[in-house]
Amino acid sequence: MGRFPDEICQQFVPFLLRIEDLSIGTTRLPREQIDMDSDQWLELIWTFGGVQDFHIVRKFATDIMHSLRPTYEWHTIVLPALCNLHLHKPTSMHREFRDSVELFVTQHRLSNRPMEVYTSGSPRCCQICGAGYNLLESLINHFNENH
Image (cartoon, rainbow, N blue to C red; front, side, top):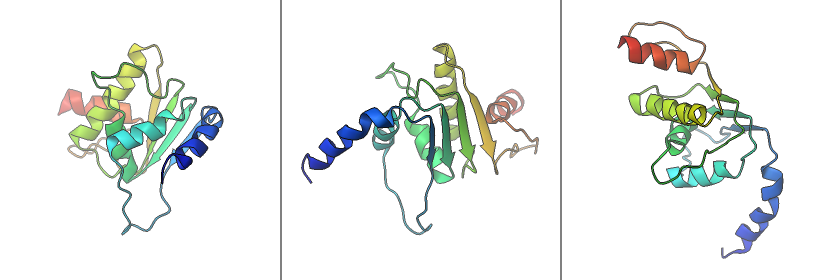
């Protein structure tokens, strides 16, 4: 494809930086796969630096949160304006997903950029004892303190 598509995309960056509410979901049929690695998700999300409300749907919640995990290689905050992270029906609540969310939220808080994390749909309940929570952070805290 060459550089042409990149040059076109670069023209839109100033507008993308102004977007305040971003949702990433899918309209593809379940049998079709979107194959993006962590670096590709991070590069895409990085473009939307002004986002204040970020909505992630289903399977993407796990993939995207994994890509947003802080690493020792970068110290810059991804989505510095983020106030609300909405995880809509994440397909998994396994430890790696919970850790990714917790590290992302902690990095923001340590940089004086606190945010709220919300879940809608499943899972909002502890898979071990069934306790229910509106905020994902509360569920993570419950799990870490009790299990």
